[in-house]
Image 1 (tube, helix red, strand yellow):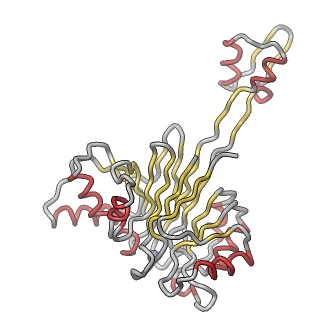
Image 2 (cartoon, rainbow, N blue to C red; image 1 turned 90 degrees about the horizontal axis):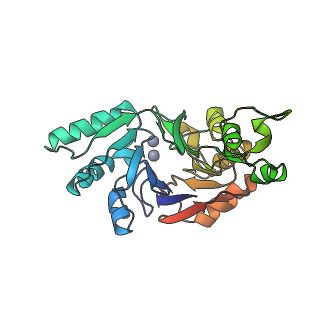
Image 3 (cartoon, protein in one colour; image 1 turned 45 degrees about the horizontal axis):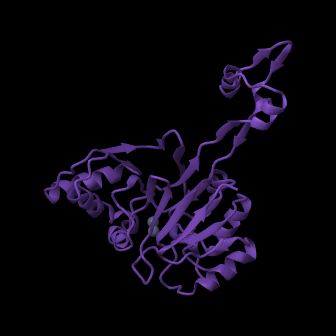
Length: 292
Ligand SMILES: [Zn+2]
Ligand SMILES: [Zn+2]
């Protein structure tokens, strides 16, 4: 199960919508995507633990996506965090934090490791290139494929020897009597969930490629069709829907909405003309994905 918390669905200048920040939670694994101003206060006020964040992934250096981070790191220290924090993003994120720490006479109580991607036994977080007015990248968070033995088939064929089962699970062929058991016949592969976040971007084939088949896509949807979004390195709601359609994702969340639009229904109405499974999340709403 992956839960997505839409902490701030706006973008650019502050408006009634909060600035961009999205928390993906999978059990104890928490990753924060972007950290607009006010993110930590929003989380604290709504009982979402900033201490539980293991990875922060920043898409690009525009202020609305990153200025909440130095303050959040300082708060983690005030709470005596000791667990390492992983940060993924442009190298300038490190420069920003370093300069802020120096200028504010602050030393974190915990280690920060700057990485280009993150992987553990169960999940993988990888960046992909997007198309904005400054260098930027989006992120894919995916559960790793799980492999289980086909218990019914083993039972049916009377295979109970755990050494045989273990070898099959390790992907090895096993000779049993006069038969050779092939692992692919006895293993069931279960695809993991995949969620994607573009950050700020205009239309890009590379985005379509990267987000292919995602269970949930959060795509830049800054404007309706009344603005030439591409000129500003952004997308319209219709472009986001087109990307969702081409990439055959399951659900599209319209995010990074300009402060000029207050009516989510209008955004949804326009997006659904191209891609039926679009929605415009409200700030502080969340979406739960379960493996089908
Ligand atoms: Zn932005
Ligand atoms: Zn931007």
